[in-house]
Image 1 (tube, helix red, strand yellow):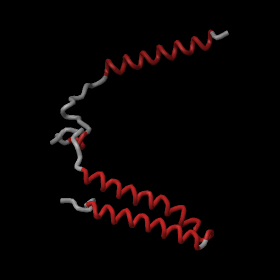
Image 2: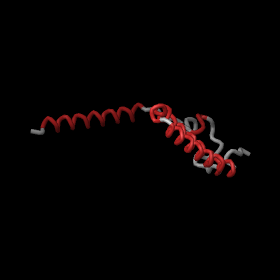
Image 3: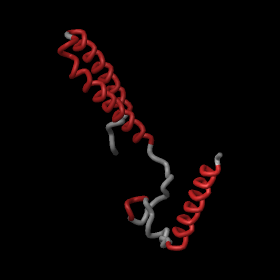
Image 4: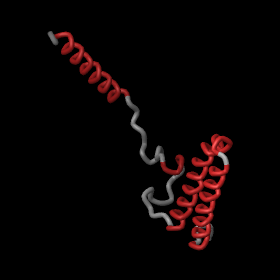
Length: 114
C-alpha cells in the first residue's frame, strides 16, 4: 500500500546524497583569510566580536524611538481626517513623549560623538 511512497522517499534520499557528494567533489575551497565577510573584504583591524562604546547603545535607542514614531505616523496620516481632533491630540501627546525621550538622551550625551 505504501510501496510507492517508500520508493519516492528512497529516490529523494539517493538524489539528495548524490547532489551533496557532487557538491563536495566539485566545490572550490575558499581561502578564509581573503574572503572574510567582515569589513566588506578589507583586512580586519579588530576582532568582529569586539565591544562597542556605550554611547552607541544610546544612539540606537534614539534611532528606534524615531523609527517607532514614523511607524505610528503613517497609519495616523491615513485616518486623521476621519477621526478628527482626537487624533491630532493623540499625535501631539505622542510627540511630547518623544520630546521627553530626546531631552533625556541629550542630557545623557547620546548626541555627543567625541
